[in-house]
Image (cartoon, rainbow, N blue to C red; front, top):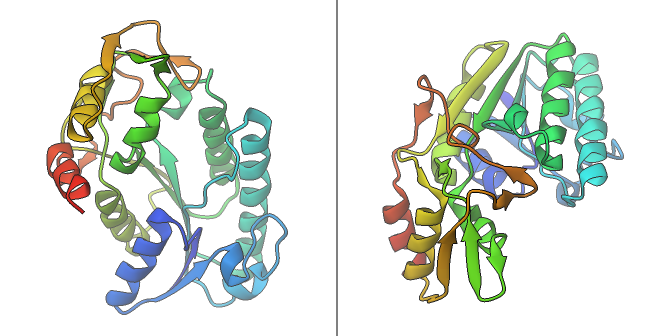
Length: 250
């Protein structure tokens, strides 16, 4: 089966391409670095030729509100048009758990807009919504820095290893479209301030973490449902402590 991976050179995409190829599929890593650009449409028609499935894991180069919205709008429209012309039978997109619950955050608004375009396209689809990756925890923690302390929301978060996200993407890509959403999340939900303490302790950072219910997560005030998955979510196998131990000893 030919599977085109948009964003195939990134963190998730490169692992996904490798995994699919190991299973015997023709996985094409499609990104500007390989001559396929979903914004300019360069190489897009050729990449789609003969494709059965397209998996979109591309990320916006800028998180500024208008820029990220324009990226996902333009990229998704171009992809869907090229897929329709090529007769692609399944569009898979990686999205974020809780996107519609955080309209204050521009990135989440952009992902909801992307999802709506896919739903209205007429192309069979599956939306895989994942929680925040372990690989992004450092950036999340640093976003709460205020001087020499971290003022962190105590709301729950359920982060996941990128390897577990990739495993879920492989299964979704090789299955029939569900024309709906699938959620995947880490095995443990914990307060973000506790996550921050664990991360800082493991990395030798002695700065203090102060819980603050008003602390904003990329512009949004959180509650315990904002960043956690539903009861039917697929759970990853890798725990944060195990991932952290491996990451800090490399």
